[in-house]
Length: 399
Image 1 (tube, one colour):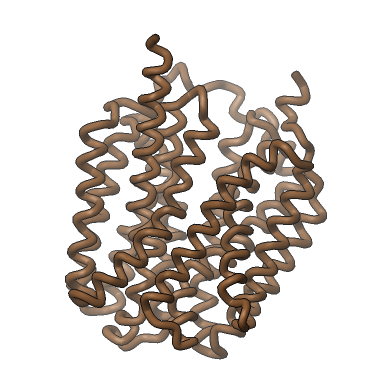
Image 2 (image 1 turned 120 degrees about the horizontal axis):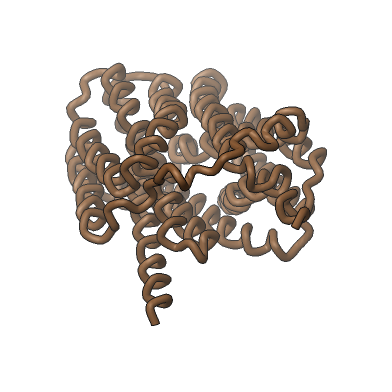
C-alpha cells in the first residue's frame, strides 16, 4: 500500500517542478519579450543593444549552473529553488527602477543566477529523485514548464502593461515567484537531490576519451548549437517581429503563446514516438520541420501563423531528441558530462542567436535576420542527416 503513496507524492513533486520552471523560464524568457517595445522607447536604444541582455542571461546561466550543481549536491534542491525564486522576485521588483541599459545588463546577470538555481537543471534533478521509477515522465513534466510559461506569461504581461503600465506590471508579476517559493517551502522535502559520497560512482573517465574521438559528438554538438541559435532567436524576437508587421500587441503576445504551445506538443510527442519509430527518420523529420517553419516566418506571407506552429512543433521534438540521441550514441556512463558539454554549446549558440538577430534586424530588417537563421537551420539539418544514430545505447546493447 505504501508504494502507490510514494509514486503519488513523486507525481505531485514533479508537477511542482513544472510550476517552478513555468514561473522562472516564463518570466525571464518569454515574459520579458512583451516588454521589449516599451523598453526600446524608454531607454532609447536599438534592438541589438536591448536584446544583448538576453544573451547575458542565457550565456551566464550556462556558467552559473555548474556552481548550482555543486550546491545541489551538497544541500539538496529545496534551498536552491527557493534562492532562485526569491532572487527572481527581487530582480523583477528592481527592473522598473533601472535608469540605464548598463543597469539592465547587471540585472540580467542576476537572471542568469535565477535560471541556474530555479531553472531546468534543478527542476530535473528534483523531479527525477522524487519519482525514481518514472524518471522519463518526471523529467518530461519538469521540462514542459518552459512551454507552459511561454503559453501563460506573455498574455498576462501584455494585459498588465495595457492596464497599469510596464513598471507596475513588473511589480505585480514579482509576486508570482514569491507564491511559488512558499509552495516549495511547504511541500518539498528538505534534502531531496543531495548526494552522499557513496552515491558518486567511480570510473568517471570511462568512455569519455571515446566520445572526444568520435566525430558524431562534434556534429551533434554543432547541430544543437545552431538549433538553439534559431530557437532563442524566435522566442526572443518574435514579439518585436510581429509588431513590426503591424500585428497588435495582444496578438503578438498570442504568437509567443502559439510558439510555446506548439513546442509543448512537440516535446510530449517527441519522446513517445522516438521509442516506436526508426529514430534517425524521426530526428530528421523534426529538424526539417524546424527549417520549414523558420523559413516560413522569414518570408512572412499568408502562412506566417502556420509557420510559427511548425517551427514550435519542430523545436519541441528536437528539445527531447537531442538528449535522447546523445544517450543512444554514447550510453549512460558518460551521459552527464556529455549532456552538460552540449548544454554549454547550446547556451553559446542561443546567446549568439539572440544578439546577432537583433543586430541584423537593426541593419537589414527582421526578414533578412530570420533568413540567416533559416540558413543555419539548413546546416543543422545537414549535420543531422550525416550522423546515423543507433536504436539502442551502447550500455543497453552490451547487456
